[in-house]
Image (cartoon, rainbow over all chains, first blue to last red; front, top):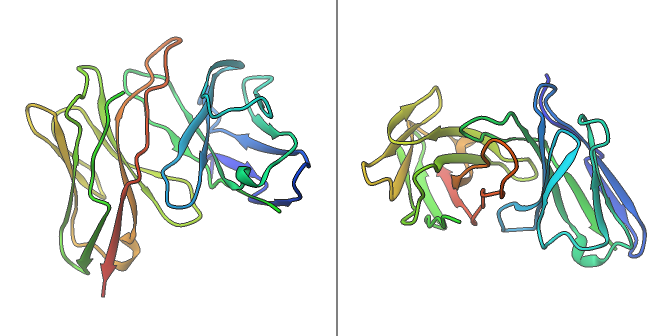
Length: 114
Length: 114
């Protein structure tokens, strides 16, 4: 299976700790997206990359959040000094840019901040 | 951003055809309409995408009237495994640098009853 993969699938941390999530997109896709989803809500856009360039960041992405895609392949999302409000599912998606945009999602990383 | 409106929930019996309608009155000329399915604790899964008229694939049909101000996802003969949240999205990220334009709403929670 060459779908989008995310690691870890689950993370429990204590408030104030730093966490890092990894996303491996579909190999031929050069766009990569990060979303956050809380219970009962749809996914909310955080940021996206085209190759290694971070082209847009949502206002939801506070200074404690940083995302990288150093070689235009996998990406990492780091949350520093986690807060209980950061508890959510973090989803990664990838796509191949064309006239129409179809994003393929990974299974997500569920974060619980105690 | 084109806003979408869809029912919060729907119930259906197994074997019935289910139609979920989404309103998107301010859809732009270049916008596509995309539907995703999401099961609990999983990432959204692409179902179908269209621009106008009718699109059909192995799992669903998408009906889009001429004015494109609404769309209807049709699921033939649903089974218990179709119980999920269905999201209607309008927009797309276009080639080259540009503003992200995909927004998830709360979706429609479909419950299939035996």
